[in-house]
Structures are given as structure tokens and as C-alpha cells.
Length: 439
Image 1: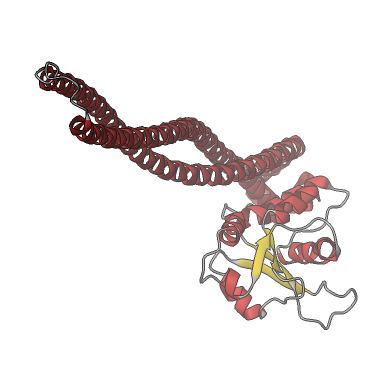
Image 2: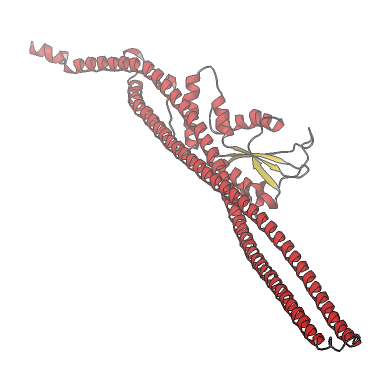
């Protein structure tokens, strides 16, 4: 019973409306849309919005496929729905069968018995060997395997002493065919298990590969994050240096303006001083005749000294202005260099951002691939366990049949041998009339 439940649940998918108050499309439309994933064995719709109201539009349906791969294809298509698919146009989704609620109860009480009746599988009774011997051929035939049909237990009966010769012949022929049929089914089951084990190994290898790819992408993602942080720190340092250079440039401009204003003020004062000397000289009183020859000489000496001081002052001012100009030029060069470095870091940051986005997309795709591979691995593992359990039951049934049939076959062969001996001895005796005439 539990094996049948697992068998049918692995081939069942539930279709529901995305909206709470929505409804499913027509049965014919939904069947035609789902037929692209595989052959539909059973379809039944339900209305779960109002309890006890069967007249409403159905909002969920149970679909049983003939093959388990159709369920995987349906669930994958529903998860990765495209723009023009019927999942979006009809506003429906596919998911595994929920294990609670009236739909699950209907699946257990109505659908599974109906499927058993359609596949000619009797319900589980007291004789587990008959249930296994008759349920397994239908299960294997659904999977595409060779159907195995065994004769019933009463067909193996043999009448003693060879009372019915045709019945003995039929029993002998059946007993000779059965041992050949049982190993064939076992060999097919073993080949199927080997195939599933190979698929399981491939799924494990794919899972390990996806895990390694995910680790590589994670390392690359962390490296790009570190590069991004370094680029941001360099950008911040460049911005700080640029602001400092701008402040220094403003300071140099202010100092240069102050020095130029001081120089203009000093030149104005110097011109005013020369004008005062020239105005004072004519107004000086001529006290003595002997002093007059020395005045032009002293004025000329003062003029030379003043000119010398003025030239020295202008030379110092020009040197200071030249040094300030050089500092300003150096500051401008530094600002241009920092600006170019800032643009370069900005470009590197943009490229790193693009690489980070591409790595994130690759990581997401690998994660999705890993999830799908893990689901396939789990499904293959469950199917392998189911087939192993079926093989063990088959081997146990074979052992019981051999223990039961071999003594009966030997007994039947002995009875047939005795019958043949009696018949041959009867054939070899001469008739009684010929014996009397000879006497």
C-alpha cells in the first residue's frame, strides 16, 4: 500500500490558480496545454473555495502522468515560466501534491483506487505474495519495462498418478516456462537499478561540479568585493588630496593678491616720497654760500642710495612673486594629476562594478543549476530505493516460488515417468490371441 502511494505520488502534480479567487481554464484547454509534458493518465478538477459547494468553478486540479519525467518537466516549466506561456496567460501554477486538505483525501480515497482498478492491480490483502506478483507487472509496464505475467497459484496443481494427462502436460510446460520468465524480470530489474545507480553517480558528479563552480565564483566575488573596497578607498583618498590641493591653491592666490597689493602700496608711497623731496628742495633756505656746492652732491648720493634700496626691494619682490608662481604652477600640476587619477579610479570602479554584476549573475545561474541537480539527485535516490525494495520483494517471491514449485515439479515428473513406463510396458506385451495360437 505504501509502495503504491509513493508510486502514484511520484507521477502526480497539482495545478492551482495563482489568484485566491481565480479559476482554472477549461479542462480541454488545460489538458492540451499539459499534454506537451507527457501522457496524462488521470485528470480531475476540484473547487476548494467554498466547502460543500460543488457548483463553483474549479480552482485546483490533480493530474497523474504516465511517466515520472513529465512531473519534473511540468514543475520546471512552472518555476521558469516565460512571457507567452500558458502559466501566465491562464494565471495558473504547478506544484507537488499537498498532504493535507480535502484534495489530498480525495486523492487517497477516490483517485488511487480508480487508478488501481484501471491498471488491474488488486488492493492489498492477506496474501502479500499474490499482491506483489500481480501489482509489479502493471507498475513495470507503465515505466516502459517488459510486463511480467505469472500464472496463478492454483494452475500449478498436479493430479496424482497421472489421472489427467493433458493437465499434466500443461503443468509441465508452465513449470518449464516460469523459471525462464522470473530471471528475465530480475535481470531487467537489476539492469534498471544499475542504470539508476549510473544516473545517481552522474547526478552526484554534477552536484560536486556545481559546488566547486559555486566555490570558485564565491572566491571571485569576494576578490571583486575587496578590489571594489580598495578602489573606493583610493577614490576617497584622491578626493581628499584634491580638496587639499584646491585649498592650497586658494591660499596661494590669496597670498599672491596680498603681496601684489602691498607692492602697489609701496610703489605709491615711493612715488609720493620722491614728490615730497623735489618739493622740499627748492623751499630750503640758502643760509650760507659755502653750503650750496655740497647740496647737489648730497641729493645725488641720497638718490643713488634710494634707487639702490628700491631696486633691491623690487628684486626681492620679483623673486617672491616668482617663487609663489612656481608654487602655484606646481599646485596646478598636482591638481591635474589628482584629477586624472580620480578619473582613472572612477573608470576602474565602473569596470569592477560590471564584473561584479556579471559574477553575481553567474553565481545565481550556478545556484539554480545546483538546486535543480540536487532535486534530480533526490528524485533519483528515492526512485533507486523504491526499485531496490521492489527487487528485494521480487527475490523473496522467487525464493518462495522455487521452494514451493521445485518439489511439485519433481513429483509431477515422477508421476509422468511412471505413467510413461506403464504405457510402454503395455505397448511391449504381445496380444493374448497370438500367444494361444503359438501354443
